[in-house]
Image (cartoon, rainbow, N blue to C red; front, side, top):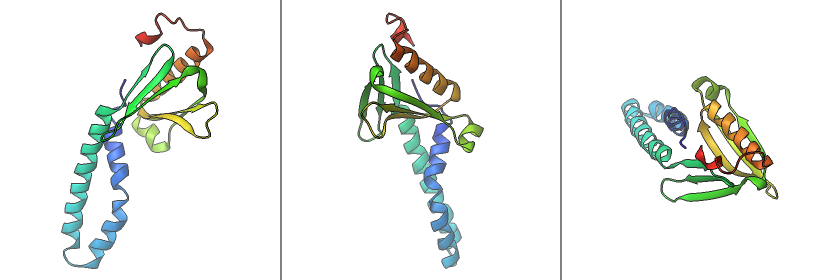
Length: 151
């Protein structure tokens, strides 16, 4: 399954937003600062948008019969299989901006780990709720294992 498509511009703008402070100083430092800042900002936005499109295409997750599989990474791939029996908590969260554009984050915490084992950021709120419910259902063992991988 894939991330929400609206995550592409959101993540690109998120990455480029730090450039605004630098651009402010460049614009105010000399006469050619504004055209330079606009050109560099455009190039950075294009690069960020291209990277985020590649990230969107390369991020995948799947709810299998026994594990939640997450594959991510543009340059180097990372593949994780998180067994449902190890998952202790599934946290769904949204910031105000994420709520406005319709995306949510799912964080998975496992037994014996002090940090989040896996994150599926930038899915739709409905998909985040579905992931949480499915993980809880499959963890409890109440699900039918024959049809569990058919999602």
